[in-house]
Image 1 (tube, rainbow, N blue to C red):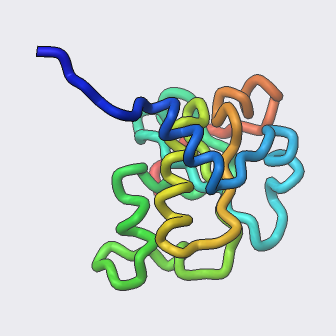
Image 2 (cartoon, rainbow, N blue to C red; image 1 turned 180 degrees about the vertical axis):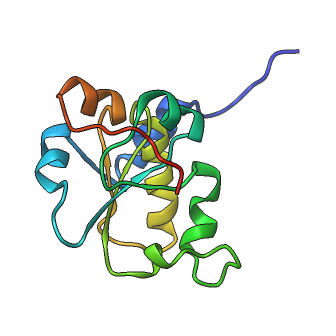
Image 3 (spheres, rainbow, N blue to C red; image 1 turned 45 degrees about the vertical axis):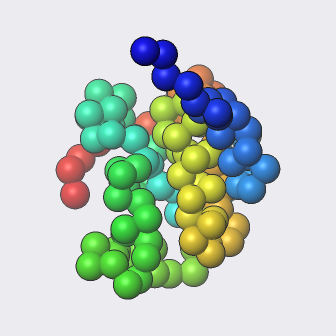
Length: 134
């Protein structure tokens, strides 16, 4: 039996990019390290261990993002309770678009995500460091 879906991932990502600001890797590099900007790595921990991380990025697995952001959640993290501009990234820019849309719908403003994700950052010779478990 074939699965019939009405929207595929690319349509969902396209719709997410109408809600969340998608920035180029060059724009992301210009924001990196600025006060009030927090990079958030939503990749799986195995990707971080294998490929490294953007220095200063906070790791929040995609599956926990909404729970860590919601101050009413028992899983809320202090970093997300601050007035920061969040710059999300994943491996290639698809998951971060969907994640950005979700947290924008939760009411956060100024959320951005990197077009092309970590792969684009690496290709543009952005700084990368070895992942160290917090």
